[in-house]
Length: 211
Image 1 (cartoon, rainbow, N blue to C red):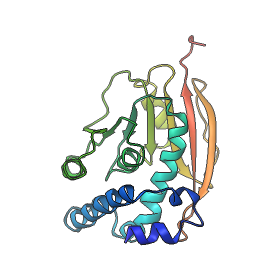
Image 2 (image 1 turned 90 degrees about the horizontal axis):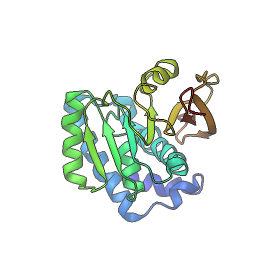
Image 3 (image 1 turned 60 degrees about the horizontal axis):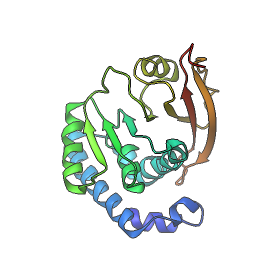
């Protein structure tokens, strides 16, 4: 199912044209698990399952491609990954990146453990709630918290020089970032299947007194 959709939209989304057969097979495996588990666990909304190609996989690929431009060899952390978006997609698409996904929901952790055991990706690790300690790396935040709350939460957990990737609706107002979060880049993109637009932005964390 996903493979056919990837190929049919490759002309409109050049990022999809570069997707390898192995990558597609891993997405398909993840999606099969998601669809089966979702029938009894409601991991994502039933409506979003029907549009998973656009709202979950393509969206996660766009975030991952944007994030990879800013990774610079650092570790990748996905905050509140839910059913594995975008962290699992990032780990599949960029096997050279070390990705840790965090999810506080025990129900979703059970699903994610089954996914990791099935996909067997050596560059992917699962954790519970994000530790309350300073960490260094590239942090992905897809629909985790409103930006104001997110910046406050992450300022206690990011080391200086780390980068935060924030994903919001394409028509959302400009993000009001605190001075210690320096805006670096931004990209807006349309999702297929009339799923709207999204915007992804990067912020380097530079605490006061370190500049």
